[in-house]
Image 1 (cartoon, rainbow, N blue to C red):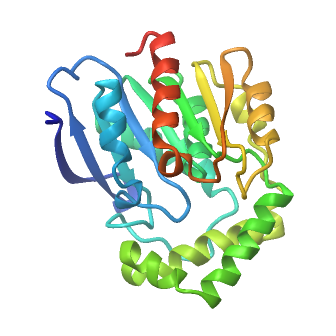
Image 2: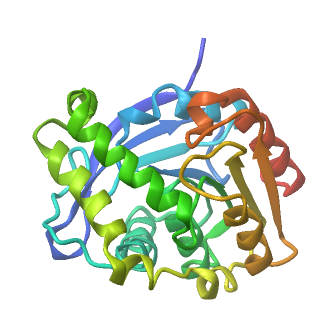
Image 3: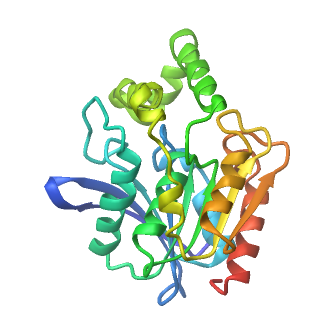
Length: 267
């Protein structure tokens, strides 16, 4: 039986922004890095499902998962979302959260949008971030990104996708979906998105992963990220896997992450 203790709380940052958190505390986690999970563009705490528990058990580390502005029980956002929202999240709000919680040793683990924000955060907080792990992160918009978003919009208007998302997002469902699809399809956003300058500032060990059948990103999202970060970055492709590796093949993701963190001396 797991001895991890879970509890929820809210913290307030500047401008009255409140973020919803969920902590997983280990009996022996004190003094070690904290795993910080950053969710995708349509995500929230509950959409990680059992993965936070599984990852915490496998690594023995304390774990923090939180909902960014606009998601779950955190402060709502308004539209239109700014083109540079990923940079704002990684350069302003994530560092504020880490400072507010007094976290001086963290491992950032992000999926999709959260992976991009994790890399920006690693560049912004080099003293605090000891390693970064990403799944299906984007450093630019490619043809699969745009095609995948267009297909998702069709499903949103022609299937039960809104109802399924509403199980997690309630009356924020349409706002969250529009914040994602409208922003990423805006030419001023996708033409300007280029995170290579931020990646070049990352100094910590970095594991950049993606499913080999990711419907939202070309394989070069991984290899170009590693090239921009430098020799401390390594690439990993999860076999027979789409855009959500931690739910499609959780054990493969956990095993690869644990080996990576062990080699970095963090577990």
